[in-house]
Length: 375
Image (tube, rainbow, N blue to C red):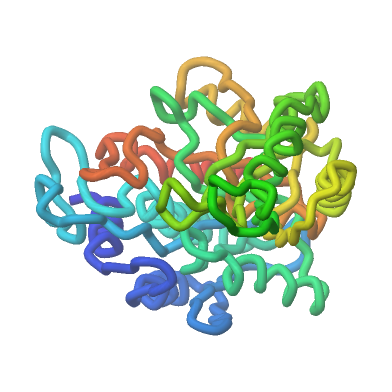
């Protein structure tokens, strides 16, 4: 069994359902310390974060990942136990195989190989891991970034190991992500009998024109390689369950995925102004998941493009699609961020898996990136 496959299996065997790290970071820290890294554990609340560095000064290159996983769901739905790593037909099965314990294992092996071959390398190589990426993302990299800002920790480049490839390893390079902003809108009405609407105020009827305006709004025409900003209503809830009662309250959940034309405060103000124009009696609570980020042309993108082309056989697609990642907390520190990882075919699904051949190629891919950037 190869070094990276063995480490990935050890990590998968630890049931680190978010935010529980289940000992994954202790295992990684031990290996990196043996390789000569300085190790710092940053625990905030119930969340474990690991910061391991080798070298000094700039440039500072960070390999960013997470050790937590989403719940596996009913174990009987899996062909094998989600926390017993299993190889079948050239695939490694287990929760976190692709998202993202395979990449974490590859980070460690690549880091070990790099410092062994280049003990006096330029700049600083760092590994940053959290156990709060799949959960609330409050006490993970968000909190670490706050601590870094306070102590003046410099980060020049960040490579996140999220599963970004589509069909084959290295065919997509993530160069940015949209921002994510969620809203919980509560519209007040007056409950009553449906036969006496003049004695009630139906919040569904009151809110419908405003919701139609929100859904129809064209927020922008896109930005660079970003698609246009999008608002999606994800849930509506009102009523008692009876068909003869006008509800007294409507709750609406919605989310905005937005490009760098916007930031969260401006979007919040725009939505509130629209609701005000409709004269609603409402409350609105916001959750800011993270601002958009975009890495322009430069050393990091050019290096990654060349390295990935060598692995995929052709230049990668350069994309800002997908959801969010912890890079959204690192980019505001002034870092250029990309995402490079295995094929995204089964993440968060039953029987999550990763091609063993891709896993065994990942350390070489990350090593090539590090060698090109810190030579």
